[in-house]
Image 1 (tube, one colour):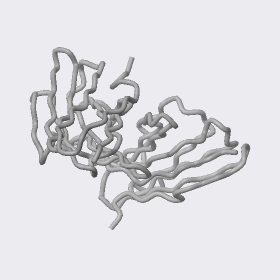
Image 2 (cartoon, rainbow over the protein chains, first blue to last red):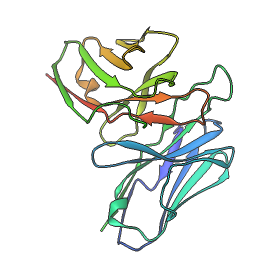
Image 3 (cartoon, chains in turn purple, cyan):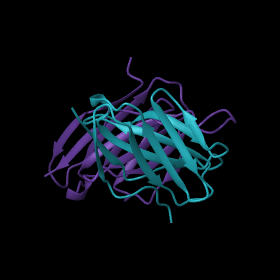
Length: 117
Length: 113
């Protein structure tokens, strides 16, 4: 059973297009994230949702719009794609540090490689 | 500012040798640290974690050391195997902040047969 699954795994598109990446987790976690990994492997947080509520928005351009219909899903929609958006986008989830015994451990999906031509 | 780790270096080791991967963090208020392993084409996977009230934690073939005085983490892998080849990231978190794990820039480990 896949704990955090995201689709599509690969996405090739033209500049200016709009695209979406979907993510689902079956771990019962309260918190979900989107991270962007650039060509140098640097992982940077973009967004985080806790129980469908946006709690982190890391100065990402407003062309990126996350949506969380329920706490098991967090989708990422990108408008007017630019060359610099090419990257691997990782969805992740965690229980979140809501209790003393919880940790910040993230469970990652396999990534969605976006290539903008 | 927020900064964890070094620019992506590469560590090459002989199979069977021990590996040590280092990481520096900048936020002295961080109280929880994790090492992740990322294999090619996959998402990062949890290896081991440590809270700031500890300075050493051991897992199976892995040990994490935390030196809060100099804000330094290390990951030691004993008897390195070909399957250990991957990019390794350290990450830090404030346990009382909003669920934000900050990653370092990673180290690539290559295991020579």
